Image (cartoon, rainbow, N blue to C red; front, side, top):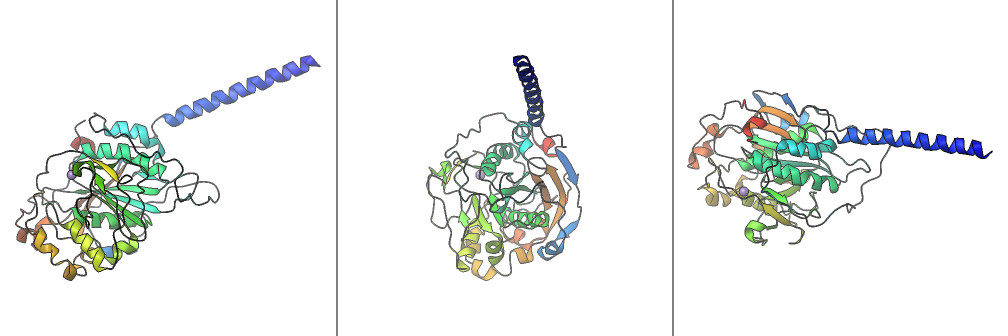
Length: 372
Ligand SMILES: [Mn+2]
């Protein structure tokens, strides 16, 4: 009798050992960066897009698949938040480092949704962009894990202005809104500068009853809100809120004014700006020199007196651009666009130089732009 028991015990230990060995192997395999190509190129040359056409275009990207039955909604307060975070930009991390670190949790194009519950909001994070791969690397490194802990169903869209024309941050954000909606049924849009990283993950990248300004306490401004109506840096509008204000103006070329114009659109449409408190809303800004082709717009102050009359005739309803390329990286979707700097009469009136080669198709891959 004890002999049989001993045999059974031996058999049991052997099978558990085998089980753990297999489990370990499986876990190890999961740690290897996902076996998906880091770049997948879709070219849509000379496809003019407008908001109406976008609305009827079919979804091109299926939503991230999720096997299994019905999940419950995620809790209103994400349970795994850490609070204040350590953020450091003086490193030589590369995009590949970030792919290795957070890539295994993502789907192609910088997409994520929680596996244990149904996210409360579908959030598109829109980053207006040109030639700032070093900043983007830091942003992706720090913000992806935050968004995951916040249990969002989200995607990261980097809207890359092609050519050397005057930069148009606001138009890029309008384009991000349209392009993200073509892909997925997002209900919330967070617009973020590439050089702003939240240093507290309790600052939820979600939308609320009113348009929300998230970057309220930036280190560059000694963690103080510079003025009461400020809406620049990082902000969040629901799809309905964004449509209500007709998006951003498309006619702010060069630096400044477009965020204040949005702030006025919001108040003219009888909405308020909501904000996190000044501890939760802390940010670290990556220090940099002013970009070329982004000089202060001399018309920006004058233009702010015209917002009220321009809401209807300048915005999503009049948005026109050309998608040069859509590139799916594991960490983000890169949409390279021609914003038509040289066909907009407002560029010449603004006193800024229109782009000489804004129709040039970008042939460099992000890695070639990015000096590792
Ligand atoms: Mn900046």
